[in-house]
Length: 406
Ligand code: SF4
Image 1 (cartoon, protein in one colour):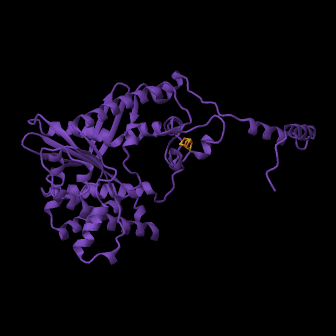
Image 2 (image 1 turned 120 degrees about the horizontal axis):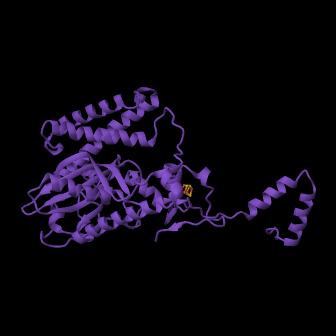
Image 3 (image 1 turned 120 degrees about the vertical axis):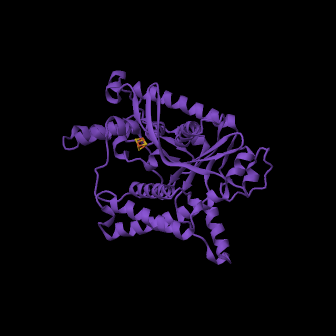
């Protein structure tokens, strides 16, 4: 049987019948309203927006990314301050925090002995690692990590993966000539209507004869992948802002150097990749494969000399411009998805990010709250938004649409 045809005359007659019967009248009216509903974009009055947010927007870069991802979700989070009820349980965010704190502590413990992690032998480094994880998990949220068998299991996983991570970070540092300038480095970006605070997971520097090269690394425990399209559309602003701030931090740390330049900005994905041991013959093969799966991902300077300082193993001519094909041989940097930028390219990206953040602050303070999540390929902002039940968004419903990122 095919679909029943919608006959407007019959539908109207049916509606009249239902309306005339007081048992169904109310239900029929609701059905009619639902069928005719159309979403109309709304806007806060400027005065209301300023009372809600104050004259200067404060917070983190993530706040601006949330606005870019969907202005309405920003309004719910920062305007109405809607949050899930807190429960005494461990969530993905807690696990990310545990990794971040443990890794920071490992680097600080090494630095307290005036050493880089690359200068510590593997056995001693793993001891430091275990101690850092134990201290972090013990003190986390009223000892929540000791509260159940599940949380103790998670603490064990955090220890295992932190060990793996520290091992990989050490290998990456050993491949190049960078030294860690600092971990969990705080910064403040104060400009016009914005007052943003943040913490950069790690900044590495390399002093050459004529300049200081800067590399920033953001540890990710989730599934976020670097995507230059999203960067240029304001949906991944963190790394660019971190590089902008890191250049200033490095500039003040090396005042005698006239040139401080970007070498790369990367995500490091905290994970324990599954390796197919059957295909591998030696321990070295396995380690190589594992390191390959844990390579840094992000935007890299196309200046071959800068790349060589991150990965000495590449067969590059120092004065040349590197290509994606040449980068493919790197054991440190992923070539697939890597974005190669010139010095001007980095500068242009930082400048456009600063301008975009100011424009966004302006739009927020003018009351923009439209329900318009972004869509890029099969991914949308709604995929990981906790406000589904509040906004009523549906792209099939009249008046709603995605902001398409092409
Ligand atoms: S579910 Fe989607 S449309 Fe609704 S607030 Fe979240 S991101 Fe916006």
